[in-house]
Image (cartoon, rainbow, N blue to C red; front, top):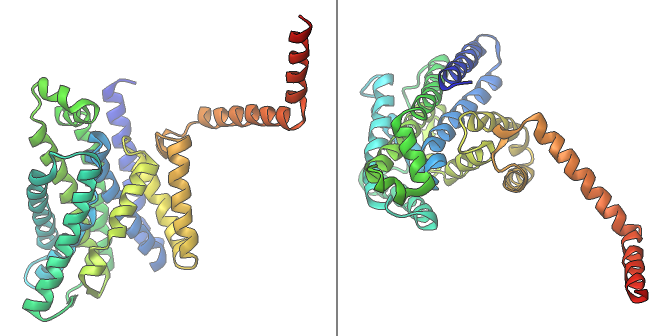
Length: 339
């Protein structure tokens, strides 16, 4: 298929999934709607993270910072402004912080960039904690104005759909090509005239905007929020794991993995939290070793190849364990002596 046909296919798939998701609150229980909300949140976070980090190969651990900024902004603004304004403010402030953070650290790569983004997340969390204790005299915020369940759900659905649609469109633009060029060879991209610094900051800001909007929308799920809750590093780490296991360089991989992880979280984390963390680790190891393209790269040919590899490996082991390998070596040694 050519690019136009692929674009049409992706948009139709997104439209179909959106129509199915819109119908969930009308027939599903409160538990299912809550599960769907968590799923939509991680779809937005992982898809926007992959748009920048999956293509440029910059490992950002700042998702929790942008999520927390959006959540706190929403908690502070809802008493004075409308729901839509609070979401926009959360996304806008997170974007502004990302622009400043990106200007400071995006010249680094690899471990240095990952550590600094995590360090800045902790700095923001401790700064807000200090401000809460010393200025306001509290440790968190009680949310007194909370929209209806369906309003929260549809808002989070819109944010997730916009994140996927943005990824679909931007991956086919010159901006998306520039991001991929940075991921392939940043020095070569610079020699070709790409303003890599501006492109990286813009991509980082897009990631932050969706994370901030998701945080602003999800903050009302709690009646009380504090820095430890909304700046939880686990949110950022799980976003990275979802993107990597789903396929950080793919379009639909993060969405697939977000659904899988949300189901695992609800079935395992509450009752068997240790097993849940072990499952995350095993999935990551399995993806790195046997499925580097993530869940999105799974095809029938992949399963057939795994079957052939397993069969060949079993034959090799059986040949070795049965003693035939040792006997063949001995016969070959005797033949060489006779010659």
